[in-house]
Image (cartoon, rainbow, N blue to C red; front, side, top):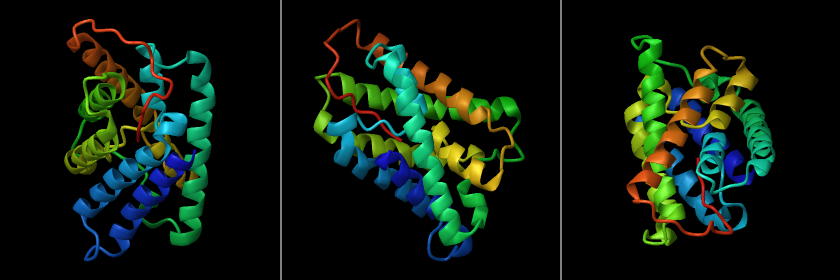
Length: 221
């Protein structure tokens, strides 16, 4: 909950600040904030809870049997509660500037294109997470840096297209507080499909190498 709260408060707050003060923080600055908050929160909480800040990541880990399905509902409930609390705090501080970063698709994109962007970006993210979190051959101590960097580059490319959510909880909080529900289902279905695909792809590429599940599974975003 702490990590998800920080993600929504800092990341979505950066979107609102960039909207009100464009000369101070542009698109690149917003992407940097998302990447940095993910990085530091993974380093801070990965050893405690696995640093799951994203329902899609939690589901994907369960799909590849690196996380218990019994714990999925509780983790998702915590993520949504934290995202909601962060969005309400942002509303108190910043009003409804830029709809507090609520995710919407660019008018030029068709629905199919928007779904494709979110699925693809989330697959990239989960591919990296699965690699650094579940494979002992990876540099696991650099997981926060790798995952935060992935969030940043995905946001740089996909932010202007779909908001580059990749995370149902990140979309849920601002949508609930600002009542911006346009195509909200997309930000649940596409990230969950994309994350599951990314995790399964890494499992396939690792050529069947199996290891016992770690006691703390690093997640993210």
